Amino acid sequence: MSGGHRSGAGGGLPQPGRCVLLGVLNVTPDSFSDGGRYLSYEDAVAHGVRMHHEGADLIDIGGESTRPGAHRVPGSTEAERVLPVIRGLTAQGVPCSVDTTRSEVAEAALEAGATVVNDVSGGLADPGMAKVVAAAGVPWILMHWRGHSDRMDELARYTDVVTEVRDELLARVDGAVAAGVDPANLVIDPGLGFAKRAEHNWLLLHRLDVLLELGFPVLVGASRKGFLGSLLAAADGTPGGPNRPADGREVATASVSALAAAAGAWGVRVHDVASSRDAIAVGAAWRYGVADSPWRYGAGPA
Image 1 (cartoon, rainbow, N blue to C red):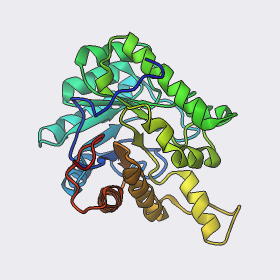
Image 2: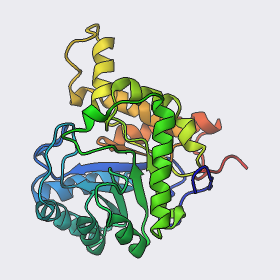
Image 3: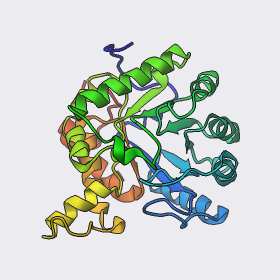
């Protein structure tokens, strides 16, 4: 499969006729930008419904923080956090993905109603994940990853970050296909901020075309991340000073969403859905030179 190409998005993936919106729902006490805000079942479900009404195509529910330096929680704790929320949202017709690296959590989440697995480890953290995804026949988002949060910063060493990330993602694709996963169900994600410094993130965004040329749907997850905060700190006139706080990074996040949509990304993963919804509309109009673009991922004007 390495070096091969496929076109179009997979059969089980959302295809709304524009860049897909994944709304982030962290049911954790320690996520970097919203930890603790949606720990209660009622708050989490209400927020998921609200994001769906604002335009999110999937609510991406995670029960374990993957911020730099975060420590792991037991799988049972992760499942206890995410499963009730998935059931509550799907009962209201809200499509959900599960953000997990554990096969047992993914399997339980799929049984609870989730329809997509978002695996920040790309299948490396749990060798059993590919079997679960293949058996369920659901889409699998494979993110570029080199190690768990408590050590990923020390793994941010590259000679050519764009080529290395591309090749390592292709290796994960090969592993998934060898395990029986339908290639049409795979999405790739460059893993901004995961074992990457700011300069790595910007190079990957600048050369997003290298990943798009592989023919797989590409997901971009830049929302509120630290490399945006450091950029904005410099723009504020304080280079090397304290980063712009997470709640001051929404305009930058929406800007990345617009640029990703204009480049042809399949989707973006964001905390603030409404601002990125508007940004995606601008990006699509820019890409195709027309408002209200009806074309789906991988297609263009007839």
